[in-house]
Amino acid sequence: MTLLAIKHPVQLLCDAQGTYGIGVVSSAVEADHRHPPEVILRPDRLAEAKTHPAALQMIMGGFRHGMFSHMAEERLRQEIHWEMLRRKGLNWPPDDLRWWSKDSEQQARNRQIYHGLRLSSLAVINRLIGEALQAAAEPHALALARRFRFHQRYEIYRPTAASHRALQLTDVFPALGLAIFGLGSSRAKVNLIPEAKRLVEAGAPLRKIAELMGVPMAFRRVKPVAAHLALAVVDAFEDPRLIDAHIPESLKEMKLWLGCIYLAQNVGPDFVQWTSRHATEIGGSLDEVVAILRDIADWVLACYRASVPPHIRRAIRGEERFTPTEGEQFVHRKFNADMSLATVTKLSADWHEAVAANMTGRNFEFPEPGAQAAHSAASTSSLLQAVRTSIERASCCITAAVHTWAGYTLASVTSSQFGRTDRPSRP
Image 1 (tube, rainbow, N blue to C red):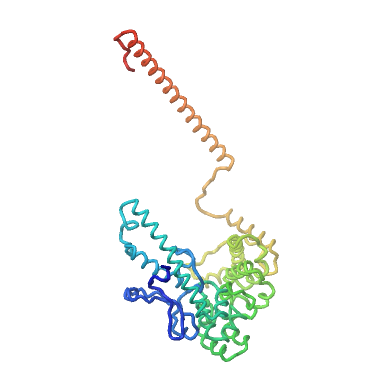
Image 2: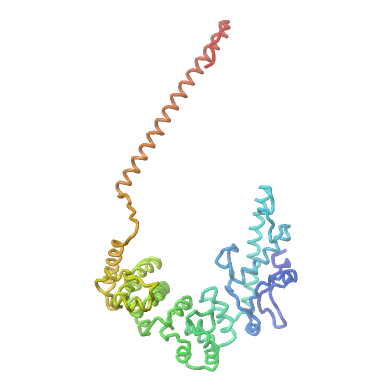
């Protein structure tokens, strides 16, 4: 009997027109008030679909904190897995016993059963996913949705599968499509989404819809998987031409560039302009680039504070939050957006050195690296010498004991051979 021939709580959802998705069909699960989400794929039934993340592909792993742990497909797999465990006599949710037993051998056996059924549940759910996608999914909308991140795929699939105009707009302008049809961003104009959807269905020009949502046309070059990063910086640029001039083409550099712009927008427009030119020149991983950029941002903020008289800063921040000096006294050359990367890096490093040299508070002295290494070597040498001495002493004791035992044994044998009754006393 195949795995799909067995009755599982998760099955293909069908109506008179055929398969339209995957969901729970077991009354026992529905009565348990868990209600795992249904993955509805056929366009004519998408109006019934609820908002939840779905990967829209076969899954792997089945672990508690895996990459698909928050997807609808994984939650459906869990229902299959738990039902399989119950049929094996392993209650779910489990009791307080570790692996359902106090016996170590039975625990090992139950653990094997658990992971074996986990793999079986993966095989079942992946077969169901494959059949549902083949029978019910709209292929063009599915291919487009899979270019986005996991948590945004179903949000993109639902409108693009139901509307050809929504599919065209999202394919041409992924960032704008995500702002209108997806979860979007905290900076997206959520209150204008209904009007934007109306314009999409009416066939309005793309530029008009982008202006309504506040998404620069230059973000058309942003790839779908990085669209959420673009929506986070839609308000960062005073001159959108900077996007066309400096945004990289490769996905890796594009995500790095957008991440740097996100950090720079909290500093000021001049720093955004400088970052857009030099973000990809810093070099290194994302964490390294962000760390360097944060240090530069601290210096840039100090430059801005140095340009504002203290009495104005006092009036803005108030007496409680006002500090007469916050490092701006060490700025000897102020930031300019036209500076080169080498100049900015050098000025930032000098400023950080001056601030560190004039910090107040407890002074902790650290030993010199050479002295610490010499002390460590001396300690290691002393330890080795003590171990060597202990081994030598133990060896001498063992040798003496062996010699004593040998003499006692020889005396015993000799006395027994020559009829002597006196024997040496045991040590």
